[in-house]
Length: 323
Image (cartoon, rainbow, N blue to C red):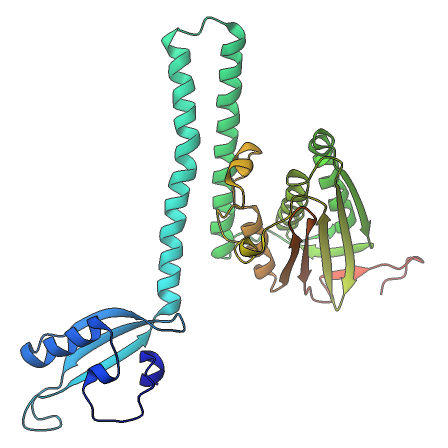
């Protein structure tokens, strides 16, 4: 285990520590513990990207010999804790940045209006419209942050209800029609008659975020295709578009909070950078799976599978008999 942690190929024992590691913190910590008895602790990053909380302590006199001539090194794998801590720090940093941008914009437009320098009524209306837009962006951002917080703490589950998924998809399609028409995008769906017992708000968030992104990041004349199938005591929802696509290097991070492939375009269309992260959290909440296929300038396909139990999902065949 020590060889693996230290990435050490040396097979010979009882040699100087420098033959087993070149980590300067480790060497200095051992030297300090032997010479002064002062313990040392630090994080050691391994070659396989783990983080070890490392503690170096002098062996007390009489434990193994009459003299204190050695040290004990304790490694504790804290990779998960450190990654969680880093994610929390990045989250708060990103939230602060995302809120600062619209607040600064609102303050600037408000100060211009307050100064009385704007005499053109059309310019005043434009500033008020921009303030309203930035305020709505902040509201959407805060709502998305609260949703993720509730999902992570398992507090986002309301009373379950029977929900006809084709009707939900049609409802979302109708709400997206103005934006789709504006962008020259056509939405089509192929949905089996599936009813689930689930949280309506979560299902609406999941469908709306997937379809909304497919419309927003599409190209003029593009299409959005939605497929809903019953499969293995669960449901499989696929949303495919013919849009701008996602670069290969970004596909592993697309579900991270606040991650944007094109930050300028995302802010221009009013995205919060949390939509797909919310989708991922909802899928995890139902112990499902999510997959992505994408190619630049060809489009993106996202598939969600939710393994709902038999009492949670039902499908009626063409004769109306429940399967």
